[in-house]
Amino acid sequence: MQNDDELTFLFVQVVHDRAATDYLRELDDNLKGAKFDIVEAQTVAEAESFASTADLVLAAIGD
Image (tube, rainbow, N blue to C red; front, side, top):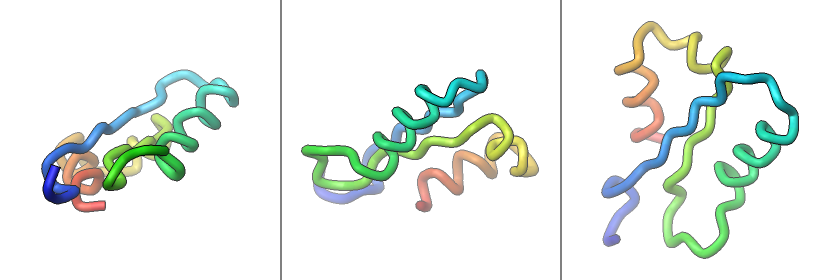
């Protein structure tokens, strides 16, 4: 990878599970070994705050 725009993983958590939330936040905020921040994690409540799925994806890749 030459820049962070080449790849993004977007996880949307649809079940309320604190351990899963913590795990996904750790991937999002503290991914080890990656050259760029390529992970975005959202709960379903956070994802639903976007007007459309396209807006959610655009926010994730523009992050």
